[in-house]
Image (tube, rainbow, N blue to C red; front, side, top):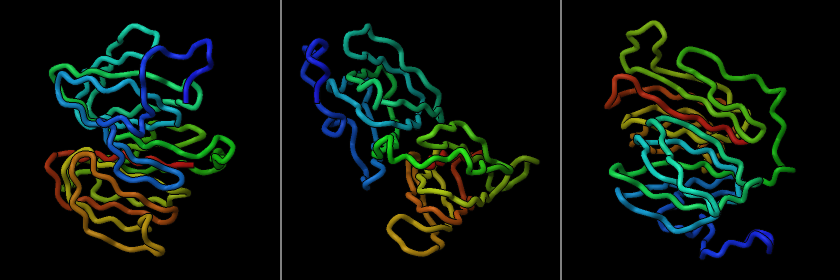
Length: 230
């Protein structure tokens, strides 16, 4: 898939699906989960993105990004940062190069066509202790959950329970052990599971009641990102 003839790039590139450092973890008809891990001082292949992507930064990011036809620019983000890019519009062709730090990002790639996105304006937002809305778009809503296993602070909590209106992906930002209640994507009914999650670990959920309870963690405060896909 190239650009229009007058702007056809003069570089060889692949779809992001075939870029070796962008490893697919799983895929459904609506979502593809991609783990992008770059060693230090590494440049990926020129590649093209065609879908809407929610990017979650799992480690401090200090890299250079070069969109085709433009000068390289810094791509610097803190751990836990979330940014969304609508590649259905820009059809981005780019490459990225790491510096001294390795790169570690998880992308929740949305595979629905624009016409199939479910309107969400009428749906209530999740609210409560430890819940922060960080993105509210037609395609997705993204929340940050913050928990402490001792719950010592006023705004700290060890458990968050919400009603998911649509499928969602939960990503861990710290090594932790949690109890997850809800309908996992490969199940047909609500279940409860004790799960050990590493940084960048994911749980794919169907719509319905959902709860996450923090049991143990490697950090004083443990953060998760919940991406709801419409």
